[in-house]
Image (cartoon, rainbow, N blue to C red; front, side, top):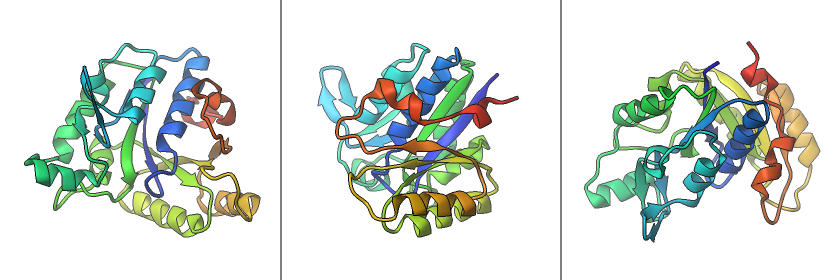
Length: 228
């Protein structure tokens, strides 16, 4: 079994990493080997080991394979702004083909279950001509959409799903996440999206003031992802 999925979101800050970690732990609980990649991460902090991103570190911890940080996150950018802005300011050129090739090198490790986490939403730019969607398209792998259940999520989720399918990729599943403690019509919005998105709902992650990574797997069911 060698399953790989591209994890995207309806926006930035919707909980892509939380969901990716949940999926990795759920796969490991099934006895599967796991790997993760965050090709580009903005908002990194300088450490004695170099620039490090908290999301990428969470992914690295959740992998069963021993993967060096630089392979989990090959492009680490310090400012917490759109990656292509940072790249332009730093004289870097982010290219979908190059980033996809790095992803292939990690996929070649042969983990049973691999997640590749994008940045922001589906159409976040990499450069003047490409977006993160082009990485997923180059890899031709199915996509998992993370939806933060809040006011506005119906439109964002449906537009994202339309764009993913319009790019010729399979929307394998979606996950309902909750980044805020209080919200109106939460259950109704989840049920409405379940009826409209046309793909399996893997589960719902509740609001947690402090996220316990070890408990995330209980909120997702990955049977549809690993079957066959």
